[in-house]
Structures are given as C-alpha cells and as structure tokens.
Image (cartoon, rainbow, N blue to C red; front, side, top):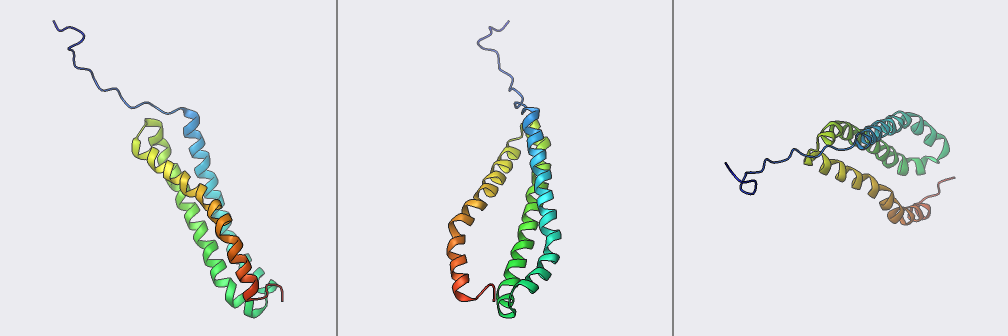
Length: 135
C-alpha cells in the first residue's frame, strides 16, 4: 500500500469559466455582427449621400478612401464577431487557445478608438487644408 505522499497525482481538468463570461462573449459576438451589418448596409446610401454633399473635386479625393475604409471596417467587425462566437464554447471548457484569441480580439477592438484619437486630428486638419469639404 502506498502512502499518500508518494501517490501519483492525477492532473486536474481545466477550470470551467463562469456561464456569465461565456454569455458575455456571445453577446459581444452578436453585437459585433450587428455592427458589421450596419456598416455594410450603410455603404450604398453613404455613396449617394457623399455625391450630394461634396463638390466633385472633393468627392473624387475622399469618396474612394472613405467607402473602402467603411467596407473594411464592416468586414473586420464581421470577422471579430464570428471569432467571438466560435471561441465562446471553448472558453466555457477552459481551452487556453480560446482565451488567447478572445484576449487578442479585445485588445484589437480596444486599440481602434485609441488609434483614431491619436491619428485623426492630424488627418482631418490636413484634409481641410488640402480641399474644401463644403464647397
């Protein structure tokens, strides 16, 4: 008979995450998918709206970049939403890869507004000097 101190310990299964966390990630994924749908469905009306609001020269400079950025943002939101929904069941089981993917997903999404605050004021002032938006 072995003593308790020499017995081989069985590895414990990974700790399960709380149901609240998994539901929060699912809600996050659904909201990201809704944001992607809004971005992608708003692109055609924005195209016509820009035509009416901007002068032809300004439209020629701004519209292609603005619309491509709008479509790219919708695509990225869609991918982040699908990724969150894909990771949620594995987060519940405690899979390390799912934790890392959700963590990187959150860092990427949180860095977007910060980068806008840092880089937008300069680009907006440059845009105002290079062409007239409201002429």
